[in-house]
Picture 1 (cartoon, rainbow, N blue to C red):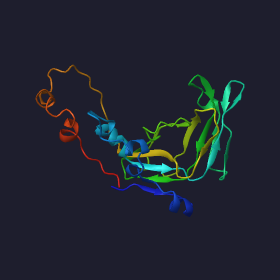
Picture 2 (picture 1 turned 135 degrees about the vertical axis):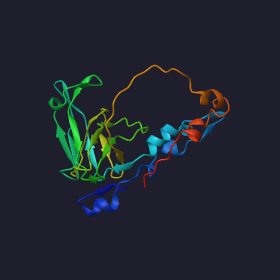
Picture 3 (picture 1 turned 60 degrees about the vertical axis):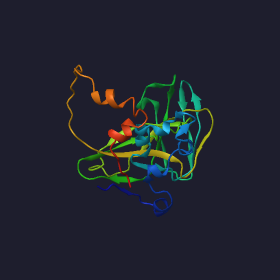
Picture 4 (picture 1 turned 45 degrees about the vertical axis):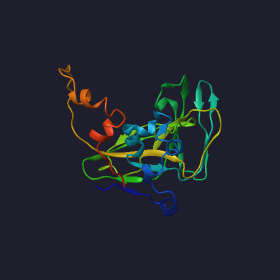
Length: 220
């Protein structure tokens, strides 16, 4: 199964291509030991490992600067970039909600990458988790990239009063392809316990999920 990223600018393709996100893990996570004394760290958590390593990473390709300016009741977000088309603006009225106690205008990153997946496959776009970005928040989205091949832009808002400078190569968005399907909700009361846990949990509590339930995912 292949996912294709294409960009109209050679310099971006050469210098700032998308990569499997497993090649760009958060520094704090990479340096964390598996054990901290006698306590297992979050590095033992396979579900966390899966979200950190699933899919592909789009990085920033042009330096840009954001700052917050209060105008009446709205946090404006004037911007500067060495590419005049790279950052755009959305007014508060386009998403008129209070965020963290204030009304905000939004910025949008026109990164230029076009993404193509096989028939029946879409992509989930999220800001890479566990990076604890205190500067800005990008909104998640799902796009049917098997039929829509234009650039998927990333809107967001500023979280800090400080001037933000985003450098080329900084992580922007995690792209996770998935197969679409139809689902029907069922809710019921469980009638039995899972005997596997009753027998094995006291013996293998630290690796039970990894050893007996986890399915390996590959994003190359």
